Image (cartoon, rainbow, N blue to C red):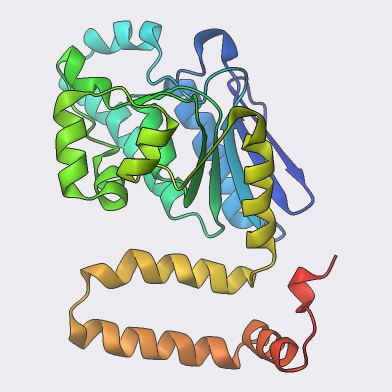
Length: 261
């Protein structure tokens, strides 16, 4: 892939995806959306990948939409705006449903749509100095495409408050409201991220994928639906190659093959 706005490389079972526009605080535009979508499509096809790490180059994670891009958006028709909005919505869904766990290394500002990239991470680890805001209401719009993921992550009450106030938050406040999963002193951010990644690498890769599916789908089910769904899931995993290996390793007090150095 010929990428101009993000970088992507694999490093020992880890896919590292980085917003690469530090001169404008990694703000996104149509090109970023397209390239990020291409990268996550490649990740989805690569079974050697165990963890995806999403971060930003420089001092910011992703400071929302590119102002120059927004100038063009103002002049677009409804149909043109709808097409671009659908592409953004599809990207968030693609990251959220990625078959491998996505860890967000939130190294700096995540504003407006940038918070959406935080919300779709399975585990977001933020620097204490990082800044967050659902700032859309300040310019007369709303966090629409990111809304479903933020509401799921933080709950309606917190989302309702922060969507209508546009409150600016630091890492500790973002942790308090549930937007991020962990917060670390700036000089300890990488150590905390490494801890999360290593923990994920010690877990069965297919079990992790199914755990994500479980959490995403069960809340919307009725008891009549989730009882057979969950019973079949555990039964299939118990007889799977990975399940057999994991249980045998546990019973014989050894590491499973996926966790071996």
